[in-house]
Length: 270
Image (cartoon, rainbow, N blue to C red):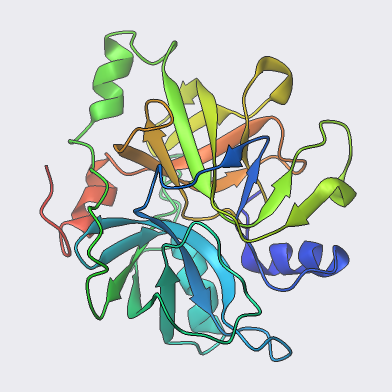
């Protein structure tokens, strides 16, 4: 099930929250561990005085912000062209101030939504926001071509740790359903372990019973770093997972030829 924004909005409305918000389950506040991870903002709630959290993403160049294609596809469908990004560890959606926000325009992968023939299943679910000015933050590092394939061939993925980062809706209760979620606009991180690797996908565990955490409804475009809590090498972004946010995190790889061909239009690739 892809975490489509409309699905998120339905769930969030049930939870008496506003707008699709990124999420980290069974994690902890990130503080300044990942200052290049930010929240994608737009005004989608007429009753709120501030900009609303739509998705999350990562600064990958001085003024280029990486996120998911279904985030920006949603914005385009809503007729929203201008967006903002914040890199604050905490963001208050009800604040009227625009301080510390960076405006920009988004570019969605032109083939977004095309799955490919023969079961290749590449949704091209990737986008960038081109910021009007640099936030002056050191960007995250992108992987080399086929890094995860190379690691798999050398049997280096099975015991590897991955770190997910995001803002918003949070789950800390292992047994509760949707009522166990809450939202406070805080950037959080969580550690995950490897499950499997496919042509376009890196699948990670977010099973709390085995010590893993993960992402949840609306945590789209958020980074999955290779390594522990201080890691800076982004290898995939959040796209989808299971309904209760406690089993499987299916993330979109950024080390593939497909993803790199798109990113090559905006950044210098390693």
